[in-house]
Each structure stands twice: as C-alpha cells, then as structure tokens.
Image (cartoon, rainbow over all chains, first blue to last red; front, side, top):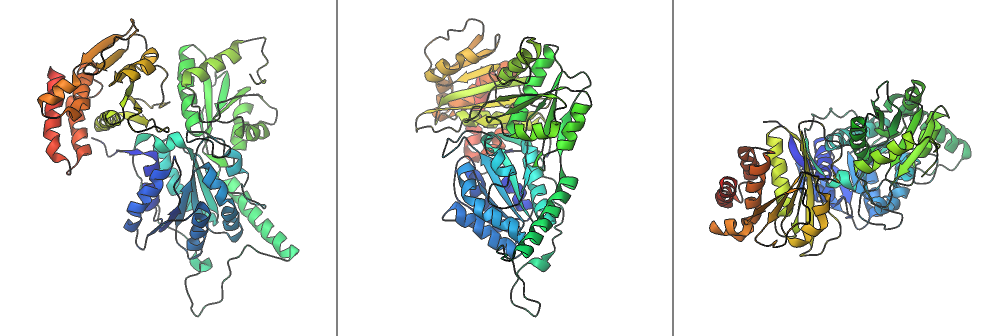
Length: 361
Length: 176
C-alpha cells in the first residue's frame, strides 16, 4: 500500500492550488483544461473564504484575479493557448502592478483556435512576456503529475515572494494523463500584506497602478522590475540533468517532449548509443549557465526536441554560445511522436557521417 | 518490467473504465503507472481508447507505438490498432461482438465472450470487467486482489451494490 493517489493532471493542479490556499479562482472553459475549472468549482469552498467564479470571458477572469490579488488573496486562473492570448493585457498589468498570481496554460495546437491536442507552441508567448512592455513572467514547466503538484505549490510561493505573475506551462497530455501523486505539505504563506488593499482604515492611502506618466518615474519602475527579474534569474533557475560522461549528445526538452526524449534515450541505450537529457523546469529564467556548463563539460552535440517548430531552440542557442553543435527536431500542431521516432532520428543524425549535425532535416 | 496496453472500443463500453481500474490496481501494488485517455473530438457512439503503462521503474513516455497488449471491444478497434501490437504480444478480443480474425499471425489471440459472461451475472454492461478478468489471468500485470480493491475504491459507496456482481463477473472470467 502506498499513500499515492491516481489523479488526472488537471485535477492535480486544482488540488495543489486548493492545498496552497488559493482563495480565488476565475476561469472560462476551454479544452484541454476544463477539468481544472470543474475541480475548482467543486473545491474552492474548502479554503476559508474561498471564491470560485466562472467568468464571462478569459479577459474578465484575469482581471478578476488581479483584483482579488490586490486584496492580498492567493489567486489562480487557467486556460489554454487561445484564452491565454486574451489574458495577456491583464498579465502585463499584473506584472506592472506587482500583483502575485498563478496563470496555468495547458497548451494545445495553434496558432489561432488550432486544435485541442497537446503542443508546445506557446513557449515564446510564455517566456517573452506575451503582453506589452518590459516585463517577464516566471515560467514553470512540469514533466509529470508529481511535478504538476509540486510546481503548482511552488508557483504560489514564487508569485508571493517576488510579487509577480507566474505561469505554469504544461500541455494537453500533462493535463489529461493520470499518474500517481503524493501531495506534500504546503509551506506556510509568507506574504507582505502591506501592499494589499484590505479596506478603509487609519493607515496611509495605498495605490496599485500600472499607469506611470512621467518618463523618469516609469524608467525607475522598469529598473526596479528589472532588478527583481535579475534576482529571480540568479536564485530561481532550475533544470534536471541526466548526463553521463560517454554521452554522444544531449537532448534538451521540457514537459511532455522530455518524456518522449526519455523513452528515446532508453531505446538508444539498447542500441549502444549513449545520449543525455537536459530538462529545464524553469523556462524563464532559462537555465542557460547550467546548459553551458554541460556542453563545456564535454557534450559537443545538442539536440533540441520540441512539440513546436523550434522556440526553446533560440534560448538553447543563446545559452550554448557556439560551444556545441545544435540540431533540432520538432513535431508541432498536436502531433505527439512516439519515442521510437525520436530515437531513429537521433541515431540517424549521429551515425550519418555525410550529414552535418547542425542542419535541420 | 514495463507493460503497455491499449484498450479500445465504442464509447459506452467502459473502455476508459478498464484502463482506469487497471491503473488503480497498479497503484495499489506500488507500481508506477500512466493512464492516457484519448480526448480528441469524438462523437457519441464513436470510438474510445486509452493507453496504460505499468512499470516498477520510472515510465518515460506515456504513449506507445508498439503496445504489448491490445484489448479490442469492437471490430473498428481491431482494424485501427492490430498492426501496432508488438511482435509476440497479445490481442484480447471481445468475441461476443468481434467476429473477425486479426491479420496478424505473430501475436497471440485470446477470445473472450465478454457479454456472455456478464449476462450470466445479470447485466451485459459488465462486459468490460469480464475482459479484465481474462486480461489479468493471461498477463498477471497486477494481482486480482489488487484489481478488485482498486475497483471497489473506484465504485465507492455510491455504487457499492454493483461491486459484488462485478467481482463475480471478474472471478468467473479470471477462473474460467
């Protein structure tokens, strides 16, 4: 007997949020994340003072959580690509106003309405800000149900700690798949409520605003945010390394793609080809220094594998700085290739002497 | 040990329930498990399938191009999935409905009169549990006790009344 429970990924996110003390959730339905909204509807009442709202739109949802966050509550919204696009104005505003909040994106095929199958095409949107202005969002990338639980809890802690919106970036497969999980005890909340608007009183007036008209003041605010982002980059960058000294190459992949990569690595091992895995669990800040250390340590070939046409690839190039050859394999649009396909691609690219490694197929 | 199975049939045959209950049984034994349902745009009466991976090691990919076991509850599922079964694998067929032969000659075929067994205990809707009995008898992926424990948990208090009938169907197929 174990204390593990078998749960669908979307429900794991919901349960982890409830256990973290998420007091306000607003969301609008979209596949493949509907179960999060469903779960929050049923369970938000378990949190003292918990409120669930099925909003009239995604835009309403993000602005509702911004408002609830301003009062000091732990807040979350969730959606998939098309809905996350709609939320960008609100996310930018939350970054400007330094409002903590968790935004879950269960990615599906895009652009446009695309389809409802798992994809990783929202990497740029998540890591490059997505909305307007000079800001960043912390982006967490879970690779299994257990990490969905752990990183959802971490997302609330990080959002509070840095007073910034945090994006949990997973895909339809992570959301729909069931795996056993154990929920850890959440950390007690440490949040300075002196910024929160908690009702009329004797104290000084408080302002939470993103409209700062004088150039000097806005510049100062931008630098303040920048220093915060620098601190996050210094302290919160995470990656999981599974590297061996005799690796002929290292695969860089996150989320579902990293699962497929693991399967491919096992198959390649049976063929006598040793390949390592570098799996970022924060996509912003990207673990650039860690990856550079890996390639400086001897792995001279890097293969980026994504369920997109190549987005994280750009961060890998920036990180590797020309120290190693970089190759790419991608399947966008909701296609989830089996491990054998990736294994074949890697084997072919490593053994074909005529083919230059850093060329796309 | 890594076992990968695809369960497939019409929506309503309890195909997802088969995979779900097996996954529960695996958790009972402390095994690693992934359960991946198909969630594409399907119509009512359309096809349903799910992939279950069970291992005592970490499970890399929850999808499989070559399942060890294929469970088909209707004919279309046989046509869709039979070519994917690993060489030497097993195809389990619900012979109450599936009255065609697989084209594969390099796999074992087990036929189960799922509806017949279920009806003996009063309800054809338990056909999926009959299949699970045969499946676990042949594969031993999890023990029958763990499976029935998992099933009891799934049915919960609400459906406690039907647990006994389901357990009878399961045991009849397992021992039959």
